[in-house]
Every structure is written in C-alpha cells, then in structure tokens.
Figure: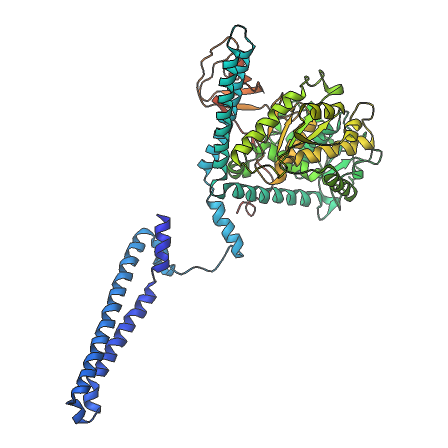
Length: 594
C-alpha cells in the first residue's frame, strides 16, 4: 500500500494547484469572450462581415474550447486522485499537511538513516536469530548421533560416513540461507550501523563518568588490579569494577601502579581510565555491602566478584544488560550480555601509542588479513586444572567447517591465492609445527616468540604481557573464533569481537564451556516446548519452566537444573530460549535511542 501512495504523491497536486487550474480555466474563458464578443465593438463594421476574419475567429474559438476541455479533464483526474489519497492517507491532505514540513531530524543523511532504522522489523530479526540458533543446534545433534554410530562395531561404517557427509553438507547449505536472511534488505548494514551508534554512545557515557567536572566532589569506587590470577582473569576483575562504578554512578579509581605483569603498572600498556580524576580522596573507603550502603557512601572499595554471595541485591551484575536498551539491543544483537560486557572491555583496553605502533608493525610482519579464523590452543599449566586436552584436529575441523559454509555462501570469499588463513594463539610453540605439518594448504599466522612468552617459565614478564595483548588483539580482529570458553583469554577476545560493530554473537565455536562471566548471576533459560525424557539422563520440561544452564554438550543437548522440579539432567537445546536479566541504569537514554 505504501508504494501505491508514494507513487500517487508524485502525480497528485494539492488543492492550491486545483485553485490555480480553476483560475486558468476562467482566464481561458475570458480570453474566448475577448476573441468572440469584443472584436465587433472595437473593429470597423466591415471587418465584422469579412469571411476571413470569421474563419479566423472560429478557429481560435475551437482551439480555446479544446484547451478548456483538456484542463477540465486534468482537473477531474486530479480531484479523483485527491479523493482516493484523502481516504487512504488523510494526514497528508488535511490541515495543510500535504506539503513537507520543515526538517526536524537534522541533515539529510540523518533523516535517511532514521528511515532505514524504521525498516528493521523486530519479528524478522528475532526469527533470523532463532533460525540460526536452531540450525546450529541441529548440526550438533546430527554430529552427535552419527559420531556415536561410527564408534559402534558391526555397522556399515562407510555407508554411515557417507550419510553423515550428505547431512553435513545440507546443514551447511541451510546455514548459508540463514546468513542470506540476515543480509536481506540491507539488514546487515542496518544492524551494524545501529550497533556502532549504541557502542559509541556507551563509550561517551564512560568517558564522562570517568572525567567529572569536579573530581573532588565526585563519588568514587576504588579497584585493585593485582588479583592473584592470569591476565584474562585480572582484566575481567577490572571489568567487573567498572560495571559496578557505571551502575552506581561513580568514578572508578584503578589502583594499578603495582602489577604482577609489569613493574610499570597499568599505564605501561593501557591509557589511564581518566584524564582528570586519577586519585581517591584520603578517606577510609566503605566496604562493598548492600545496595543502600553503596548509594550513601562517598568512597567504596570494590571486592572480588567471586566473594559476592547475595547477588540478588545487585541486579546489574553480569549477565545483565540495560533495561533501557533491551527492546532495541535484542533486535540487533543475538546475545546482548556479551555485547554489553564488551563495551567495558573496549574502554579499558585502549592502548598507549607505543603499543598501538607495535601492533601495527606486527599486522604487517605477520601478514594478517581477512577473512581469517582465530584459534586459541591451551596447553601447559591450564590443562587438567581448568580445561581438558583438545587436539589440533578438533580445532581445525571447526575451522574447515566455517570456511566451507562461507564458500557456499560466496564462492569468491577467499583471496586470489585461495589460502584459508588461521591466526594461531597458543602457549605451546610446537602447535605451529603440528598445524603446518598436518594442514599444508592453510596459511597459519602468528608468532613462535609470543607462544614462548606465554609458557609458565616466562609468564608475568613485560614480554609475556605484550605477547598476550598481541594474541587477544588479533583474535578479536578475526571473523570467527575456535577456542575453549573455560579460558579467560578466549572469552576476553570474544567480548572484544562484539565491539567491532557487527552482530558477532555466533562467530565462535567453544570446544568446552558455554560463555560465562566469573561471579555472574545464575544463567537461566526458559522452556518454549514441552519435553518428555527419552533416556535416564534427561529431565522433563514444560513450557515456561526456568532451567539453570550448566553447560552445552554441543551434541544437541544441554545440561541444567529445572528450577520447578529441581531435577538435574539433559534436555534438547532447541527447546529453550534465553531468560534475559535486565537492570535499570542511572542515565538518560532518550537522545541515544532516537
């Protein structure tokens, strides 16, 4: 209907134009009278009987009548179109509103952007997100079933392998269809533009919070950098501190002069959190206790998130995100909690000039390019204490699958050399040798020296700090990640990946855990379908049940506890959806959400 109305607007004229046409008709009639009636009174009498003059006047009269008839027909057509338009879109023609009003949205490009934003349909976006999720889970289910069958004896393994291959290719093709749905009607560009706008707005909020006009009067929160853990863990601790300072409207003071990774402290690699307010007043800080005490105290010292047990008093803890942003953010990002956390990590990890220069040089030295998949292979001390061993084959199977899907989606996806690029981050240098030996047709990018600096013998040195920053940075620039979410470094890169301006929620494959933030609120999902257990390890679901998720087995099933029945077990992953945690912020979002 809109296109028809828009087309009519090109040809339909306002009532003022109709008046103009009416006046024109009157003038034509007056002109005819002038030609026919007035000449006999003003010309000599003999001319009145002159046949040539009579013929001339008759011709002029016929032409005038023809013009009048044409104008009458145009007037009737315009009036008919006006009547239709008035019925279908009265606001355009009533009360003088037909003509465009003065611009109120600023320059033309802003108005155009507003029109584009209005084209994003919530139902389309949510359908796209759900389709992609269910297709992903279908792939896990197919793999889980057939890999189990292949391990059994006395079966036609060749036939099963062929069937699995066919189903896998079909699943890959379905994934490409979901990608096309996400790109239809410029939706990819629309989502990206909106995410960049929201992300930049959050960065500006943080900048203002960290640079109050009167530092002495600003309420503050102190945060100690030296938590006894690795780099990723320490960064997430500081991220938690900044989230608390944001929601409690406090300027955060980072006590980072002494750092286990560098004797020169935080400022050796990252910019200070504030340019104007870097020290707390010399007053005893209050302990981080109840929400009421937080609001009253002038200076509060942030604890370690893991020791906060009464988390229900702090609704803003991860995996929460702003209530004010929920309606829009759910439309443009498939997993808002990680996007929100990523905004704080983005503000914290702003490199000093020397580090930026070093990373730019490595970009050229490594030959880093897109498209590229990043893999983070954990070895050394993290094995068995925090994570299980995963062979390079497991990583590369996921890399190959991602590239296969992209090539189905776009057969000119790869650069001219046809090489599939992989960025390798690891704490074991021999991983590079294994990869190059087993996969000679791939282009592996990374550094032996960075891998050596991550070993246990060299950890907590300046070289190790620069090495891990390098890996996190380049992993966050990749188009897809394969890693283990049990690793804080992997999760840190995944969080930063979300700040690039695109919906990168599905741009990962974890070989173990689901995404989580240490010390988070319980991660709940809601059942959207009933489920009757089909095996001893499964639990019952009824629509509306809340399930506390304990993990995804990546075979079509997740594990969790049904909070209604208190039963713990497996359930089909596609039968649930996220139960978002929302928290109100102390800021005005009205201008940002326009």
